[in-house]
Amino acid sequence: MSTSHNRDLIALKVIGIGGAGMNIVSHMRSQGVDGAEFVVMNTDAASLKAHPCPQRVLLEDERLGEEPLGWCEGESRGALVDALSGARLVVLIGGMGGDTATKVLPTCARLSEGLGVPTVCMVTLPFAFEGAGRMERARQGVDRLEGIAERVVVFQNERLLRELPVGTTLDDAFRHVSDILLREVRRLSGLVGDAGDRDEASLRHRLHDEDPCS
Figure 1 (cartoon, rainbow, N blue to C red):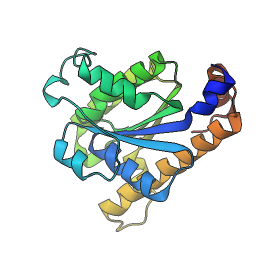
Figure 2 (tube, rainbow, N blue to C red; figure 1 turned 30 degrees about the horizontal axis):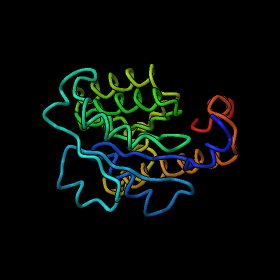
Figure 3 (cartoon, rainbow, N blue to C red; figure 1 turned 120 degrees about the horizontal axis):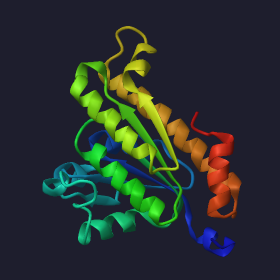
Figure 4 (cartoon, helix red, strand yellow; figure 1 turned 90 degrees about the horizontal axis):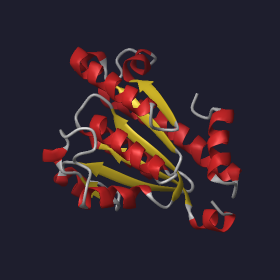
């Protein structure tokens, strides 16, 4: 990748997938991240329309059950490629365990990496009260991501909840999780900025060398 082309790219695209991902992106957008462009994706047209992020992708709910990439063709594939293009780094965010993020995150990671864009996935695991089945689906989703994305960062909601004071509301707990992800995305934005106009391979090396999401 030439340095002149690098200057034409934004630092990173932050893409929230599914309900949890959209909520986290809404929080990040309200707080601000230098050099970031935000996108949201969901199967729910009403929630997308109500979201403050101007870049939205409506996913085809009835086809998400087709594995692994059968649903992603034609207009669907074109919309995802457009959403994933134009940045030096893509950050995919979602809550694992439900249908949308668990199925769509691996597809987006595969497409993004196929475009030659380093991809970091930041995902949350369910709270214990959400049930063992949801947790198992979440872990299977994370396993799929591990073999695709440049880096997968997993935040355990239950562990984070235990760190909060007794009596913390669920809304405050979700806000706490969003704040942690916001800090990590800001670190990544700074990392891409520090990398300057160096090429994709240099950025990938820097992602590993400095381990920004530990």
